[in-house]
Image 1 (cartoon, rainbow, N blue to C red):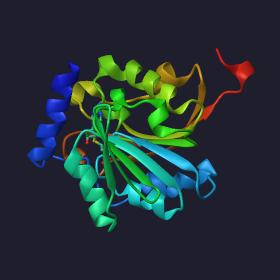
Image 2: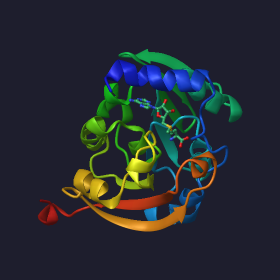
Image 3: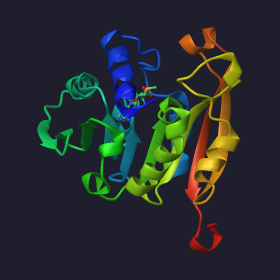
Length: 222
Ligand SMILES: C[S@@+](CC[C@H](N)C(=O)[O-])C[C@H]1O[C@@H](n2cnc3c(N)ncnc32)[C@H](O)[C@@H]1O
């Protein structure tokens, strides 16, 4: 899918309220495995393709600084509103930057975000981001994420199912795909695999999986 079509696809889903991916509560696997990150309060977590996920509020409540990017401006505004925060809003090279307290969310295209917009990042939290990217853009997504966040440790929450049983998004991201995208720079460990519930469970028999990606030492890198 071309870039413009991709944005159109997601914006119509938001406008039509077809947002079954929005959990309405923090992700259970994040809550359960958050401690493996071993982050200190004040550490900076980047949440690509963040939607209006309650994970953002939950990470902030852990004392972290949180940045994210999402196509849909209304979703971004809703996060600040529900937190009772009035953001400063500025235009920044085709993106709109919303900032208040420890939270900075950009409305716009992930691929237009630059490392200088984010500054140093300690950890990446990908929930339903990689699974939302069209297969032909996946490598570009992983490369751009690496350009933005370097050696930051990543918690990746995605789905694993028989791709012939359902069309994505969300796409199935089995181990081979994760390793293919990240093995050059990261060690990947599956922390938990659990049957999906919610609207997706009615469409396909799938597992929700959480992976920890830890940067390889210089000598281990391929
Ligand atoms: C499956 S949803 C997941 C949202 C969120 N992470 C959650 O768990 O609820 C994917 C989100 O990514 C956004 N998105 C997709 N491609 C994007 C891109 N290139 N740049 C910014 N946002 C994008 C969509 O608008 C959508 O809200």
